[in-house]
Image 1 (tube, rainbow, N blue to C red):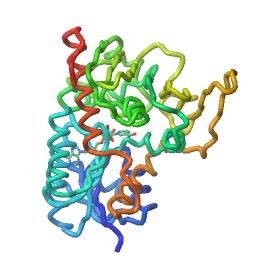
Image 2: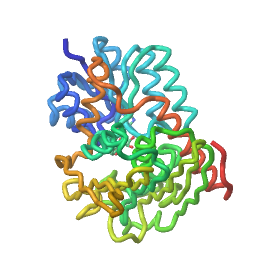
Image 3: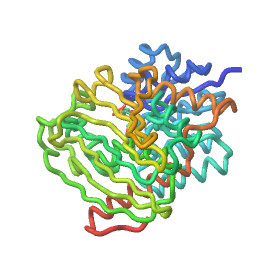
Length: 361
Ligand SMILES: NC(=O)c1ccc[n+]([C@@H]2O[C@H](COP(=O)([O-])OP(=O)(O)OC[C@H]3O[C@@H](n4cnc5c(N)ncnc54)[C@H](O)[C@@H]3O)[C@@H](O)[C@H]2O)c1
């Protein structure tokens, strides 16, 4: 029998979650959002039969749900996931996993205790390029990845001023926590080594400059509203294995164009997964690259890995993986403990930026 899934939050990713769940044979039966107009509009667009004004109402009215998918501002990820896990549901939650590692650990513990699947939408792991690189890694063609550079830089990409994205209490932070995907992807390629210490600096240049707003996101709050997050961060992570990652994340930096990339140096091959945008923030203008660099017979050799284009950036495949995991047909693309480890690094990045010192993880 097909799995029934409910959506909590009519956020921008609903379309991808629904497409992914349905492509894997699941049914999307209901959606809840305190903003009923948003719930109803999304339900109509996506063909979802039932709408509710809260997660409580949804969980009560549709007890036959196997799982929920959480697409709400970051502050509500942990409480809603804990509520759903307690109700016996499997959970697919948007990134970031939570506001911090403490919340992430509580979610991981609840999933383990209830023997439920808890996965996060690290959709970049589900891109064709990432599947390809993981295959080269698994076949031993890349060797141990000594170092990686993780980068998501936007030239003008502040996702609305004064709303939840720019309010640290609601979002957990700016681009460090919002654009965590490439750090996660680098760690995924490196088999998630245990972090040892972190050094970072954040900047708030341009964070109130409206000319640095992205082409999407949420509407600006016209009166009041809070903007207390960073606009950019640069950092360095050392792992207990001796591996290292350097990172750059920004919503507003004067770079040539938006770039989303992981570059890595393995003991047998280097490589690159990169998305460049013709127009910042618009996935349908993306240009993807996947390359490996080796040294064959004393000569440099460059390999261009050709994979099918995926403008959705793995978002549909990632949601499909969640259903396949619930049904025991696929291995999960990510685990709760990896999410906790990632959140520990993010906590340490912010702590280092605040203290001006390296921070132990
Ligand atoms: N994976 C990706 O590529 C990607 C891209 C964009 C956003 N996201 C993530 O998706 C999440 C939502 O972002 P967004 O841009 O769609 O935000 P948004 O503000 O546009 O939408 C969030 C929706 O959640 C609803 N909501 C708030 N509290 C709720 C609650 N307690 N119960 C139910 N609904 C509630 C709001 O009314 C709103 O309709 C964030 O965590 C964000 O990081 C992921």
